[in-house]
Image (cartoon, rainbow, N blue to C red; front, side):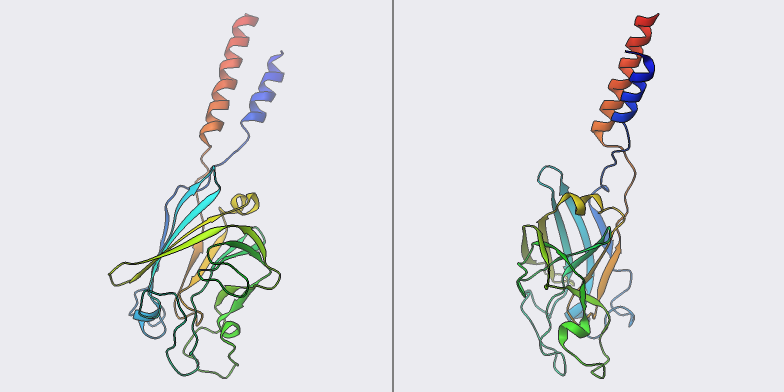
Length: 239
């Protein structure tokens, strides 16, 4: 085999095959709960502490996400009321805006979406839409905050589970999501954005851009090494 051909093969095997970001990826709420720009209303009901993409299993294509937050002052994900126009508040979905697609993981089953499963959705519902409020309702919430994925036209992507434990701390609830993704979601994961509202009034939000390092995967290093060894042997034979 000619050296030019071997070089071509080595290059084709070592084209960038970049890994996902290094896990865990932890995002903390940058604002203190006492800051009026953060929690609207009682922080014991709405305050988000952190959201962490804890792990990814490349074999099963399964993500694990941990969310620490307050919800309704208790340790249940059941709907709750704070009175007035807000008589039926629900927990928000974990939303992803990924490669031109929108995905949602519902923390509780609703409108045909099963809790914990990953869905590709046609868009999102705002706080105002999910609560069914008119434009002149109580302003003490974030009406334009995206809080739910649209269930109409949603496509199932992968199964998932939801587990909930009480932390006993200032942020009293830890929810762990474990869901299976498809290749389109995984390939677009780095560089996508996520959003989570502690309740459908949007009274506290967390979100961010998922960024990672361009680090070649171990298999890529192995192929590169094999290619270089082959080149060395071929040069010795040619000499």
